[in-house]
Length: 296
Image (cartoon, rainbow, N blue to C red):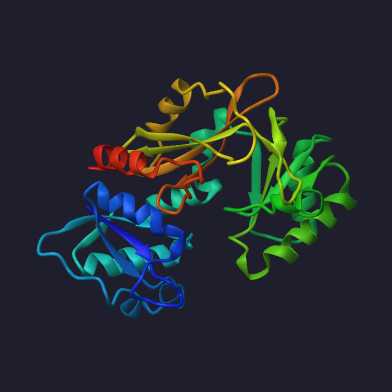
């Protein structure tokens, strides 16, 4: 099994520094690894991006561990590696299934906040969508990311029926996302979660959230989502989430879950496990050992 990491922008012969510790753990656990150029990949130069990949004699399973890719960029990576006899663990369809919330929403609908979305960014469509939430508080994001560190200006809408506030928050969100906007807009019911602490830099309220990695429907590891704050003895109740995971169309994915103020547990979102970050608190050796056991 081969892990595919991004190289350094400054030196394509060494790994991106943010993944150096992961690479050490992967090697310790018996993985091979190769480097690709993220910049060349995202520029569409797939041959150049993969120029240092040595083709194995027999087809090899690959896992990409790097920065987020659009579905089209991921497809180029997948197809390019396949030509070199390396097959990434998730197909392009499986990647998009967990990368875009609208693609997986029906699978997690029973345990996630009410959501709707649009690729049409005109005011009339937006106002019609948010009207489905009545006077409830909502948040706005795109198909992948929010601007949660700009909480009041570009994420949180206290009252979905306040058209002026909706417009101002959406406008600021679109301004900040700019060319990085993923497909369209998603509106989600705001849920009050159990407070953890305030973010040391942005001041954003952090809540008790966890990131669960699944490989082949089995739990690889459960991490505290935030590196700040005291979680105490709080742990997610996993049975419902394991059951839902059996129907997710992906071989390696993450499920971010959180505890509501009333004690219920909900799914915040899914993510492709290849581009989901490990928190600073992660035991990387344990993660890669468990990944090796469950990914094959």
